[in-house]
Amino acid sequence: MAEDSDLNSVPGLMRAAFQVSLGATQKGLEMISNPPAAASKMLGEMQTLMTVPEAAGPALEDKAKALAGAMMARGLMMLGEFKDAGEKLGEKK
Image 1 (cartoon, rainbow, N blue to C red):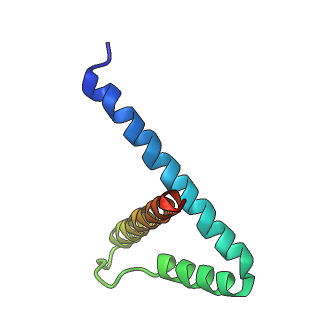
Image 2 (image 1 turned 90 degrees about the vertical axis):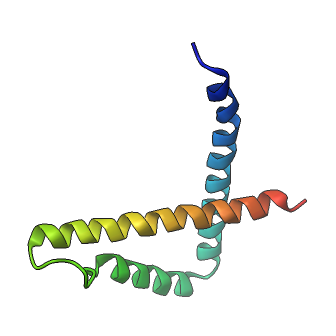
Image 3 (image 1 turned 120 degrees about the horizontal axis):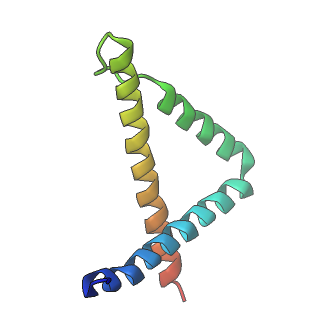
């Protein structure tokens, strides 16, 4: 049986998911409105994501781990940006 704390956290999770979705949609629409700027931004992001961090060791496994860590960190940063944008959109009335 679900505990009260589990039931209380569901609305918060739903709200956070909606905010992230709303923020991602807004960012996508911003990119569609200015394709040249969006393309250069995307290429810059891709270059950043595919560049092996200098702190990586010489072994291929170390480089792969460092690259995966950099990608995960950027993904988390993007989630935060999307959530912030969704919160701002939700506050506007």
